Length: 222
Image (cartoon, rainbow, N blue to C red; front, top):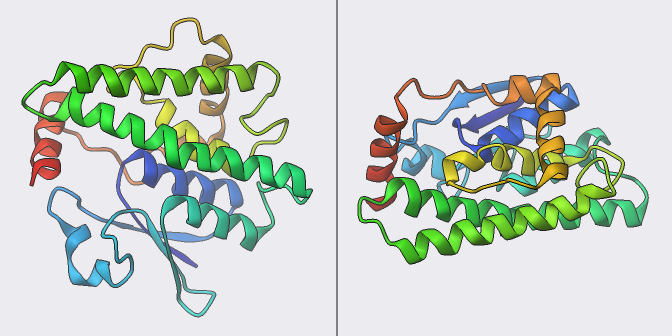
């Protein structure tokens, strides 16, 4: 049994999608970010960085793993799924996973902060992170022109890591006009049953967009 400590964010959705795809038994422990549960000692004992997601593998001596990319690698290696055995193909999947971890996630995250959450609007910062997100989308679009999935012809943990972020492009204020291959990929992955289950695990907030932005603003500015 995998215990998944998570919240309704793209990083959290990566892992719920992976667990669904891999057919692993798991239990969701919803961490209330607005209440600061990720900063409490009992969660810090699981993830010293105080961020979701994190897992405890109860079937492996209660082994804990934090950082979403590390969790995906751990689960792929545990199950032998969604990470190619061929060394070159495995490296390609890992490279694109790191592309998401070091690029897509951080840039879209900063776009969200300056575009949605900060009360003081700083146009230069908004443009900077939206443009960089768009540039990364263009890199992906070029890759997807010749490949069904982000790392090649196989669906891998790189797709699981990237799709939950890219699908939220409107929230980040990023335009995907003209990126036809990226759009195809977004739509195709949205049809996967594990994607559909994963993005509602745990359920998203019922707050309006304005109310949600206000609550997150408090969290990111404290």
